[in-house]
Image (cartoon, rainbow, N blue to C red; front, side):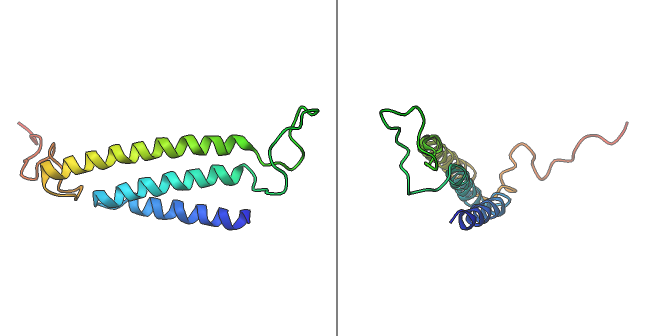
Length: 125
């Protein structure tokens, strides 16, 4: 099960990098969302995938039983899901506002600070 999830994590990361390197803003945002899911799945896979022994400590023991799943990565993932959703919502609002102001979602056309007709710095005196 874990090797299959490792391959899936690799596919998620490859897809995310491909989308982030795009020139369209929507693809970049989807790449960021997929990257967050890839990181969450990576943390989940690193926390061992066992269903045989629940991560519950008995009353007479000080540690969980051998082979129990680690509950810390699961708690980290729950927190990361909330943070990544709010981050994605914030980026989505920024992208929408940029589209409203500039009229395009192409990152090359969004170069407001670097106009195309700019002659550049002086070449000499």
